[in-house]
Every structure is written in C-alpha cells, then in structure tokens.
Length: 423
Image 1: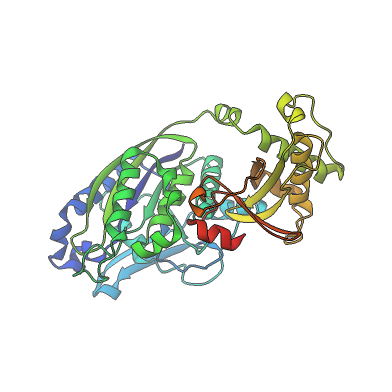
Image 2: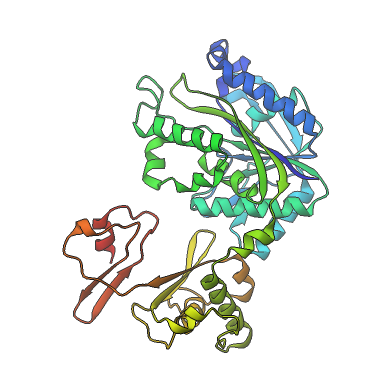
C-alpha cells in the first residue's frame, strides 16, 4: 500500500489521433513511451491516480484541489468532441488532504468552479491509461504562482496523506518542457529553451529530482515551460523513498519539449539516519523557539551543547521560512551575548516572536518551519567588487550609524551589484 510509482508525461493535444489526424506520427517516440506508462499503471493496479496539471483552474497564492463527485471532459476545443473521458473523484483523499493542509497552515484551497470539467493536461494521460486500465478514482491538483519550494513542500504533504490511506496510488506529473525550441515553432526560439530541457533530462537520468529546485526564476521564464512545478511536487512526494528513474523518451519536433519518464518507488529511506545529520545550530534554534512558545521564558543552555558553542562568540542570523515564504528573520552583525549558544537562542526567539514584519509564530507552526542559522565571521573591508561573490559572501553596507546587511546565497540575487544595491 502507498505510492507505487510516479510518471512525468507531456500533454500535446495532437498526440490524440482524432486531434492529430496524422501529425501524431511525428512524435512516435512519445506515443510509444506513453503506452509503456499505461501498461505499467495497469500492472500496478492503483486504487487512485493523482494528477498534477498546469491547465486546471489555478490561483496565484493557493494550490487547488478539484472537488466534486465526478468529472468528465472531451477534446471539443481541439475539434474532436467525440473523444470523451469521465471518472469519479476520490472523496476520502480530498477530505484528508484538505484537513492535513489546514492543520499545517498550508495554502491549499478548493475554491472556484470548473471542477467537473477535466482539462487537457489531465485528459491526455488518462486517454492512454484508460486503454489499459480503468478501475481507479481520480484526484486532481493545479499549480499556483507560489515559489518552487512551496510546491516541493506540497509534495511532501501529499506523501503524508498517502501514507494515511489504505490504498495504492500512482502520481502523474503532467507538463511540457520548453515551448521555445525552434524558430519555426509556435512560440519561437529562445536559447534558454534547449538548455532547460537538457538540464531537466540530466536530472531525470541522474535520479536527482530535488535538483529541479535549483532553476532560477528568470531562466524558467525565458525557457517558457509549463511542467516544472508539476515535476517538483512529484519530487517532494518522493523525498523519503529510494527510487529508480527511467527516461522513456524525449523529443521536440514541433518546438515544444516532450519528456516521458517513470520513477518507481522502492524502499523508504531511514528517517532516523536523515535526522542524525541535522545541523546542531538549527536544532538549538528550534528548541529555543519551542521552549519560549510553551513557557514564555528563555531556554537555558542545554547540558549537551557542544563546547565550541560555549567558547566562541559571533554574530548570528536566524531565518524562518514556511513553504518557501519568509516567516521571520532576526540577527546580530556582531556578538552581543557571552557565547555563540546564547546568541542563537536569543535570536531564534526574536525571529519567531518579535520580528515586527510578521505576526508571532504559533506553536502549531514550528514543525513546519524551515529554520536556518547563519554564523557571521568578523567583517572584512573590500576594495574591489571582484573580491565579492554573492553565493559565498554576505555584504554589509554602512553610512554613519546606519548599516544594511545581506546574507550570501539569497534566491534571486545573482550578481554582486544586486547584492550591494539591496544592502
């Protein structure tokens, strides 16, 4: 029971013979790969198929789950209204995921209409699957304008709900790659298009799906894709599994990249071994936040604190994020406490409860926060921009008594000039 397999699939309408009317023969490799996917799904016999699609109704600040008893759709928008598909939604899973999201303050919604009409990002994979297997219920999610990491965290949430159910599941990540592969294509050419596809294909072949989070926003926009966030949700759902990833096909004769891949789940990873590698500084920050929220008191330095945290002094920044969004960040440029341990404890509490930009963190949120602790070395003067690197070094800009600081390796900050301007 649980998540048996996941698949990356494209959704070009012309792959349907009644739509393509012969043009589908130009993507023969994609069709053959789709048939292999359908065959594998049939062999797995899932109770529920979860489809993540970029073409259902969506919202900027929420991921959406479709809610209804059943749904249907056809290809009338592509002059093939005779091709129809219908299915029932898995009511249990929908209720469970909504409840789990609510308990974790996750931005998932069921708002809006159109849930009874299946979009082509869902219809196309079901068209092939239905030729081999039809004894399933459906759950359908659409993407959002939220950050990539939020979609990854949603995948982890999906995995939690899947574990709660006594069913077998298959996950379909529907999405095309770059739409800008050829000058003669419908969307033209952009050099980032082939580069994007190449990087995604390499990630699939290497079975390093979390690397999908490394794409920069401007690069994604120039590549003009529609599947990345679908794939990232899938990656999040697979985080705690050993997997075997196989690229079944890739082609793009019409100027749009079509990839088909299967990711089969094997054993679950040992969570205990993962937790053992957690940063001691992050653990201390989390303990101090939990203690303060429970008691309104400052945590005494724990007896098991490593000696170096008791001997060293440094400025520290503690940053809190929830589902990719900043939730609090407070720090000291230079040390103000007697040791590094106290610096972390006090700044963690300040980030959670006293950052004036945010409401205080609630106790129920803590387990769902991403906490980072940055220890600052003594600042050094620089005399040339060539000495700086926004991935390795933070910057402090001062004018009189006023100071602005920016930590290194900030998402979206790629040049030294950007880093200095922000600071």
